[in-house]
Image 1 (cartoon, rainbow, N blue to C red):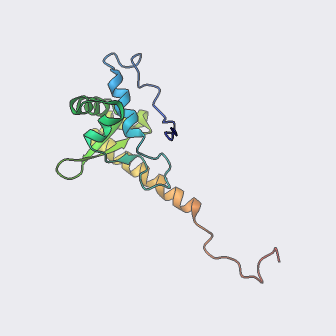
Image 2: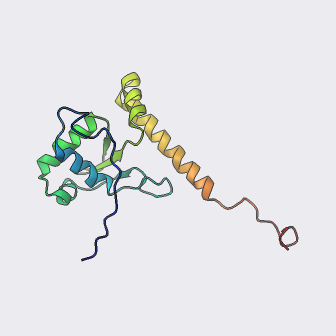
Image 3: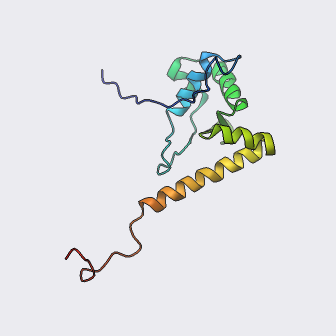
Length: 147
């Protein structure tokens, strides 16, 4: 059997030492969601995905209720946030810069923290596109110093 699953980064604070109400299902839910996104701004799924509750639960055999409880806990502790996507689905966005997100949430509320995070993600995507674009004009053969 071929093992194709890759490693997934987890915030160092997502543990029982940092959160007294921590449960292992929170970590399992986070990993299940995190494994579906990319942290590379060049990718279309940079920091977000939209799996069903059932898809999230399948990875670690969690019930739908356990996933819902875990997502609520992860949201309340600023590890991710959600946006409704249709009647029965959500878009899950992983918060990479959690300390900044917590500060923005404290100073301006959750909506402001989400807005700042969304702007940061767009900047990251824009910077990645600029970095990967070819020069605006390629030198003509006669201008090419290598010839």
